[in-house]
Length: 478
Image 1 (cartoon, rainbow, N blue to C red):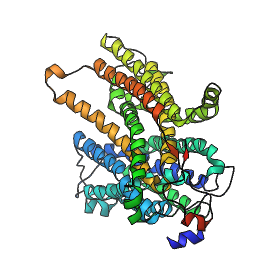
Image 2: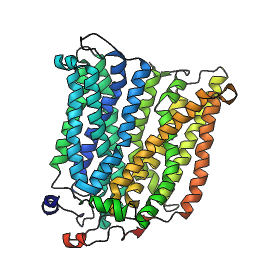
Image 3: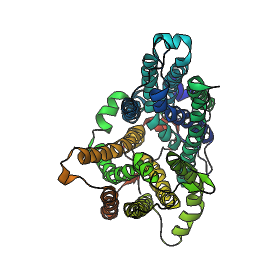
Image 4: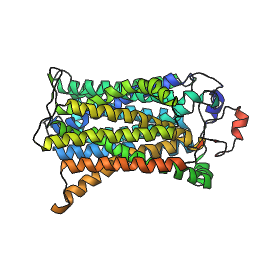
């Protein structure tokens, strides 16, 4: 840690343009997301159709077992950011946390790729799978809160006006990587010429590239020193101002949790099962219902520049846009997408078979809301977190994703487990979430009017000044 203080910048350079470390961080994120989503796109299918026993005989899991292990894995990825945040903010700093856990991540991918080897089969593909997923869980989950916080650390007061655009391109890189790998890896798995070795190996190679790219930018990046574990658990997180900061942010996160609940339904079974009952003939092709959800990553790539360079400037001419106003507009738009879904369900219940174009319209509306809520949420989380708690608040942000999924799961459990008098049909189900989102918008608007936040950016100071800078104070009113 002492070495990093002397070899690398520990505070942002006084620049008006993009920091030199940003391209390396965004390139790393694109390759890492390619790796994660590529691996995840074949994981359930591999367990359900391709896994072998130690004799080399096909011994697939049941569908429910495969779903269960996939959900356990995803839960771990979104829960372990808490550990990564403690390591980053309290011990190693963000850069060294990302680099060290990326090596663990690479080892996990290597383990999965080796399942197809003769010795991998002899050890047991289930054993290799469990080890590989645990290592990826530790690596992916550990670095998740650090990467977005690290990219924000590159900015100071002189170029903070570029922070919003930067987070937009950061989110663009996530979806670009996931879109490409989600098409490629299932094709590799299904092709007998390649199979599981390539389907898991290509994501592994992508993660190695991501790690090397990140390491290559080490002298271009700002390395903000950790607070120290004693300080982290003492006078920052559990101080009066630290707790008040977390409380303020949590008020906003409650509403973003509802957004992720609805977003998860569009990328899961609910919208896909509805699509199965629709006319899937589109532009001369007969789509598979599961393919319709790929509209989301394609659309987000289009909407990010459109929102940043067209929609936001146009709205700013009418009234000033703050992060909370962007989120509020995005939440309202998300609710509108479910109005379309409810309308479609009404037609289906009436015995009609509406065109899939209607659900694609819902995806267009939902993705526009996502571009405003999710990207702005990253920016909000970074700027509202005290400088020594950046990764920790990003970990809480990631927990909103897991919590949204959990909320939908609990609603479904209630529906399935309740007595007949409490069961609801699909139309009522979608209507419930629509009204929930509209209600959240109303309450969020009231809360936003009273929100008094502070903006915390890394100080553009000398090393001596950084060493004596107050830990939590110094934020400017937002």
